[in-house]
Length: 69
Image (cartoon, rainbow, N blue to C red; front, side, top):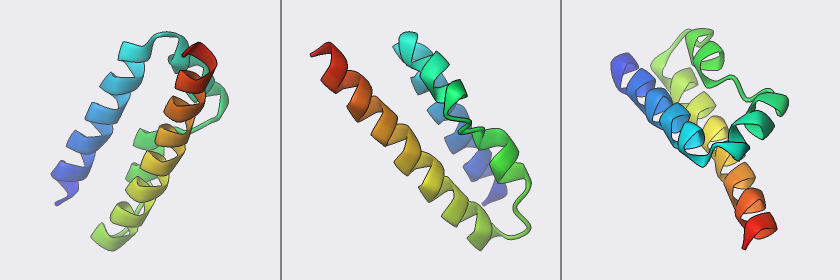
């Protein structure tokens, strides 16, 4: 399950990189998905942290899209 979490983190990072201009905002908002998942001590904690990372990332994408469309 831990490997799946890191695969999901990789997918999130690739998605942000595809947005280009969103990448800087993501860094400025200090999302740090890899560091956050690596600090987790259990699978349940990883799942909860990934939900937070996804929520924060999705909120930035929605904000970004609203500014450009």
